[in-house]
Amino acid sequence: MTNRPIRLVALDVDDTLLTDDLTISPRVRQAIHEAMARGVTVILATGRMFPAARPYAKELGLTGPLITYNGALIRTADGDTWWHRPVPRPLALEVLDRAEAEGWDVQCYCDDRLFVPRIDEGVRYYLDIANVPAQTCSDMRALLQERETTKLLAIGEPEETARRAEALTEAFAGRLTITISKPRFVEMLDASVSKAAALAEVARRLGVPRDQVLAIGDSFNDLEMIRWAGVGVAMGNAHPEVRARADFVVATNMEEGVAEALERFVLS
Image (cartoon, rainbow, N blue to C red; front, side, top):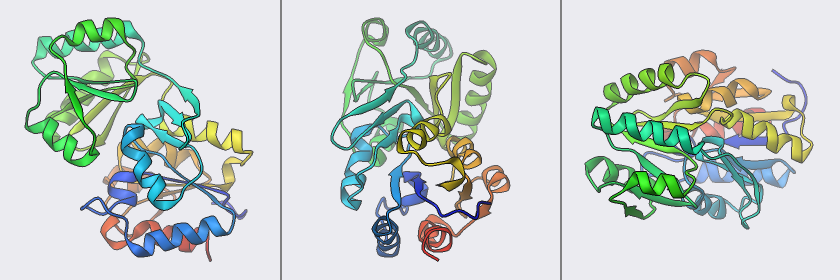
């Protein structure tokens, strides 16, 4: 725990900033605005696509960069790209081979557009959360041979997703980052990618030391960021492993845990 004032705050979006109905509570909104009025930079750090994160940044009046795709893309609200680390094409094709052999679908993210092989229940569930359009693609192999994908994502039931993440972590150890963003989503990214790495880059560019960074999240894809920050906070609704490894635990997303964290570590 740092005794120096917090100058940079990184907020996960789903199940952290947002309530279960995908809104921002008035208390959370007020705490963010008060932090910004004190000169603190508040940014979003999310697994979402840039187009799915930008509306919340605009709603809050955030002017800093957005960490999106779990850290694979850092881009400002006005479109200036600071960093982009797509999945290497041979590895993307290897994931597709595995998915086809095992009978599960992969969705791809090329130039901020979502491509899916079909629209099924899992994709509809994803789209309800992300609020972005999806384009069906009958030949994902041809797509990946021609275009870079910022990340890959597979959807399944929670137990299936946990097993798939474990198997992918073993198969692609040292070659890809494998993470679970929501219980039904396993994501595959370049090996150098994490929210922590992206947050470190943002802090470097802004001239903010690590011990003056606050990070708040709830899921496995937030864990490295929470551990990296000078103050790492887990939501009360976070996975038990995430709560156990955070510096502090606050209330749930439905109980305005982000406001609690900001009031305690920034505004007090």
